[in-house]
Image (cartoon, rainbow over all chains, first blue to last red; front, top):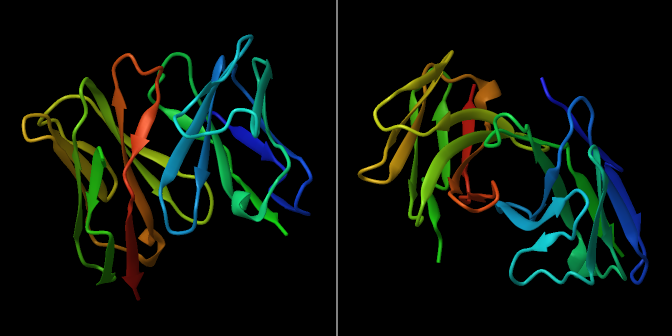
Amino acid sequence: GAVVSQHPSWVICKSGTSVKIECRSLDFQATTMFWYRQFPKQSLMLMATSNEGSKATYEQGVEKDKFLINHASLTLSTLTVTSAHPEDSSFYICSAPLAVVMETQYFGPGTRLLVL
Amino acid sequence: EDKVVQSPLSLVVHEGDTVTLNCSYEVTNFRSLLWYKQEKKAPTFLFMLTSSGIEKKSGRLSSILDKKELFSILNITATQTGDSAIYLCAVGEMNRDDKIIFGKGTRLHILP
């Protein structure tokens, strides 16, 4: 089946630094990828839609200057949390739909970010 | 306002029991309803439902959609400890670039 990877799995950083998270579709091309955020014991919250070759589309309330998204190729999207603060600590998950069956989204394993 | 509401929020049963998880939704242009299972990391896909009344089945799991009453149920029979997880319901809308809206999930714990 389709596989989506994320790197890193875990990151701990100091407040004020920037953190880059990669999302890769390993055996299929994804013109669209989605970035989610999940707080403890809460559901996934869609942050933005990453579009290959164009600007990302952000959900209401998500700061685009803080969460920079770059969809550099058909298999790679990156999320950069700029000037991270402790409140940015969360579980970040990406997903990518197969082009044929857009509904079925394959999720990456997630990246846990802890900002000290 | 929540568009996808799951119930119960949490459920504890003994191994061997049957459970029914509920998902109701309210969206303008319904396209599909999806069920996911989330254990320690990212969700894994279970079912996609687009038509009313057609049961989808995978082993001990089954699901059905009622588009008139705007809800879906996920059944798990003969539960096992490995079924312990958060079960997420999500709804896709037309003309929404394949975005899906997640419910808060049902946390299921199976006691041995």
